[in-house]
Amino acid sequence: MPREWVIHEYNGWQGLDLIEAPLPEPRPGQVRLKIEAFSLNWGDMDLMLDRYSFSFPSFPARIGMEAAGVVDALGEGVTGIEIGDHVGTLPYFYDNDGTSADYACVDARYLAPTPQGLSPVEAASIWMQFMTAYFPVMELAKAGPGTSMLVTAATGTAGNAALNIGRLTGANMIGTTRDPANVDYLIESGASHVIVTSEETDIAAEIRRLTNGQGVDAVFDPVGAGMIHRYSPALARDAQIFFYGTLDGVFPTLPFVDMFQANATFKPYSLFNYVEDDAARARGVDFVTKALANGVLSPRIDRVYPMEGYREAWAYLSLPRDSHGKVVIETAKQ
Image (cartoon, rainbow, N blue to C red; front, side):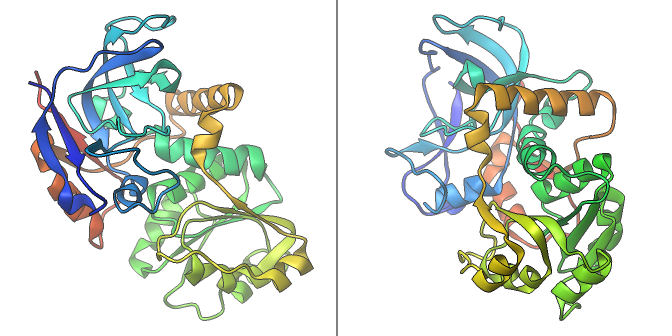
């Protein structure tokens, strides 16, 4: 029988169980996907602790928002997709029906064709990181020559994707990391400059130096309360802060004085809202697909685990890492 990983309460990855389940049947508008690989994302971690942007309607619940596989069945009304197509899931509000399974039924609009040349493991790693970064960098901040963007926690997959994409625009991309060992990796990824936050006591002064006194026009920040006040004195006029996570576990209090002086805006950002918009979703998919085809973006995989190793993979992801990239589960060949 097909297998799926579920939780029975909000107790984190330690509470995950691998169980057998009936083969799901697609509802109208859905596609059944035979999953070949699925990725771990920090949003899944937060969801398992009930601190994400949505909650489970009931338990047991299946985790996961990013997978790749083969179309196995079509629900009523689905067009433009054929059985046998290789597709990946875009991040979406998936309620209880995540992708940590051998099979999943997904609304057809949340699927994108797998770009040519990618393995299932690679295809399961691309949409969350690159789509998350695309909208703030390209459409909202409109990064380009003469603009500066700060990317905090830049070794994370979304932050690193922002550096990758920002480099394509010619913007001055400033990445932060706590570990000096990550500097070369961030420069290779597209950072114009790197600030090591464990060594730099005055981050705002360093930002002003790196921007010739102008400050940053945009910030892509998943950290939380522990970072915003360290960079806010270096916001440029009309700067935008795109806040998309709380790695330190605490929502920030806003630096109103600095924001008043810069006429800055604070924007809580979630990719889900752009995936829900048909036109925006199409623009993001088109950009990522073309960038992968042209070789200017590429997936980076850290580790691959078998289906049975999902908890082990979460344990690995939860610890400090010396390597970088996505952690992916490859389901057994069936």
